[in-house]
Length: 79
Image (tube, one colour):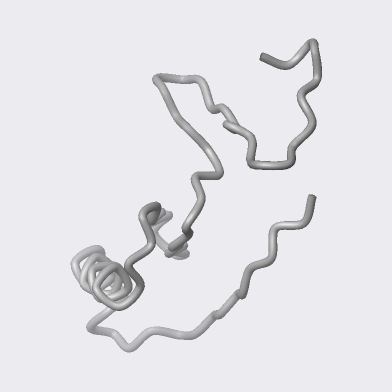
């Protein structure tokens, strides 16, 4: 399976570098890209913003699961 994506990177102006600036940028992404699944992962010196029509991961407590996609083959040892 191939998951096509586009990667963009840029140095943000000082106003967008803090947590509130990144949250504002993420809010703008959500407004302009009405994808049902989106995320903002802020690691301090690096942030990742994502918007997708598909769910790639499901997190429940400490467990992370990949729910599979249409066309994925089911493996008997993988629930």
